[in-house]
Image (cartoon, rainbow over the protein chains, first blue to last red):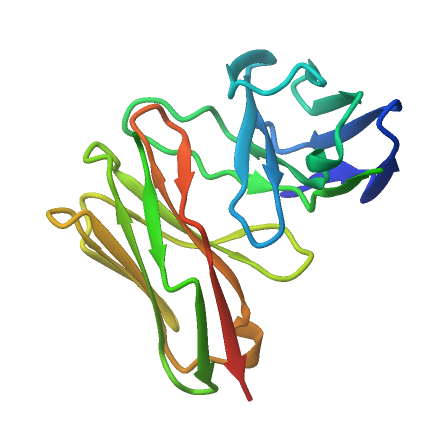
Length: 117
Length: 111
């Protein structure tokens, strides 16, 4: 299995709702990532988990809360979002987190298209 | 700070022609440069990459060149086909390990 899956594909939520995005991989990867992507813009890194521990938080507002329950799963909990948070949320995984001179290829999931009304 | 500039932002070519997309990076410690293709509504997919100890890499109709001195790398697509139409992102691995992406190039191949 060489695929990263994400659910749901689409999500519409109000500013007072609480929802969660889910990501799963069964490639034995130990690093997982959340990216946010606006239309025709590059992905922006939000969080990195390495061996189920939060490794990087790119100063993301606290209304986004990541969780890594085990090595195959990554969640992004959403609460009190703003309309400007509407975007494609991409999950990715890699064999390990990049360190030193070596880069581990990141495999992207298909994304969740989030609309905040 | 770390930055990758990508040009052009849009590129329109006739089917069969070549397309070239250029990127410049700022972090001299960058040593890995991937290119991603993202079709409309789809995920970014790695199409080719190059490491700093190599000057050129080719995979069928696509090739990437790297000039470390100029901190410049380019994607070349030959014999373009309509299915090559997509947004292409270059990226550079920063010293922190993060991928720094360029702003993207929308390539349109006209049949």
